[in-house]
Image: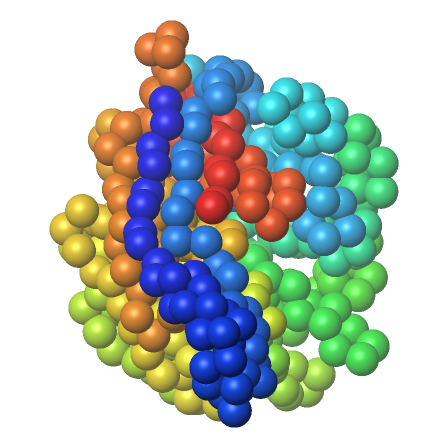
Length: 439
């Protein structure tokens, strides 16, 4: 399957005209200015406006790619793909961590998988059992036990050889030594507390925050509508040191803390079914303190799974996926980290359920948790004027395999003009391998 995206440019024609005039002695005074202008504009226009997306193949693996929720590569391991998955209660497949070798990008090879043995003896409550949760001085008794698997995994992040992964329904933080990616070993774990197997997760996403002498895992908790700080400096003895209420309305009918991104000394948090971007000051984490310093309210601020702009000239910009209906892309300026300012958005019905955002070249890719499986592509050459250029209505191969409810995505750059993308669906066990070509 090939999809071409075309947009005209006029720069080369004007530059050629000036060169001809200069060659004939016209505008001699303007010669140097023309050359300088040409270099400046050429640099500014060096990003592609076209991208081809080709589905190379779709692979099915009911054990290792069943409902993948996070798919990431890390700078110290660019040829490895780390996935965390929820698994399937219906199929009896537990969620897990899986690590793939991408040395041959078109042929990912699984090196290992891991699920926590520490949960083998945990008893699940009977489905329908009334449950309650206490946060601070308030207790919510509206929860009911849900028959999910114990090993349901989502959030992940990495510091050096330690990978942090979350068992989201048991509320357990696992710290794994992945120095040998073929043999991940659990070094330590920490249970946050609460109760098991309710429709809303105890933990969801995690980001590592590093100070001069300490490392911390910052974890969003939907159940507790809070951000939790865990000292992971000693991976064998993780320690919860602080927690702050993010101000989201309580579940089960309210908002569940989800997205988190860290920039400078601040965390930016969103919630599913939410309408806020909450800013948390991390500067006093060494004194076991977290502080909410700002909360932006907007109906389109739903989930807000985010990433920072990789281009150097725009590295103070935060891109967030809005999961609502309509949904899409939100862009924030973090020049003043405590005071993010929205500078642009592309929110449309055709971008509903945008669940993640991934940036490559000058494009933002938005996997959309919809049927049969859509992928939105937004041109962010000028971040203040993002432009929706294509929604791919179906990710499918020639053998009838489809990605349903696209959920997680990772992009592995090959060079400035080409990359491979790996997309996973929420309601199947498929991994799609795409080839991206910019021109």
